[in-house]
Length: 307
Image (tube, rainbow, N blue to C red):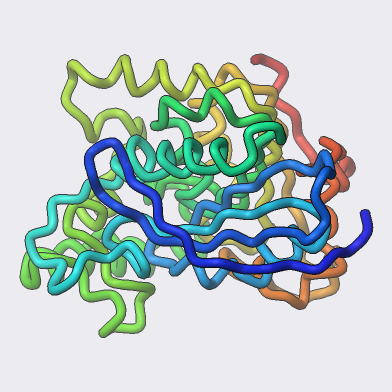
């Protein structure tokens, strides 16, 4: 894989329900490569620009890359206050990611389509009808914040922060004022509520008559999934990753657990893998998977037998 020049341009695209999202497209200067088009899905409450250095890295290797903010966040935040904005977590998948897939396919109809999903960003594709068009997925610490799956060392503090303090503050303000607290970005009330009160079975958050359809959409995804997390990720524990992968039962799924020391660091955590100090290590390994379906960490991999 050789490096090429990259241009970046802001883009907007619409969802089926009329909401317009903002993002950026990283275009490699060299056309005609068979490298996939890549969509980067953010973690909850994290701006898309957090992933821009990683997106540029992938574009330098020949992949056009789309980053975008979910509705209510960053470039896709409506003017004025979030107070009273009725935005459920599920809409980030059913509407926003679905629109991102459609936009990516119109931009690069002849390329395969890959997704990099961080945290909730690795779970959202299963909500989208358009996820059937995805050819390969890399997830990083992907889970949907069920509190019993948090790392034991952090479980009490995370429970107090995200499942007690967050819903109380959301009720008081009409949205979650995360930016003011230094706890990620502001979140719509619906997103904060789903996070705070998520049960073991994700679909239990939705009306009983819709649950079978939610499970069916996840099962319809056929893209092979490489699910990566570090051993010190307090959110993306093995239990959390397995709970997430269980919904993608139509896909070939492998889970990778990386010791930070293997990557040359004492600690990495839930957010550190997208720091550019991992450019020549973890980032290059992800490109092996996205471009050639090669798992660069076979010794750290557990594969789910059923598909």
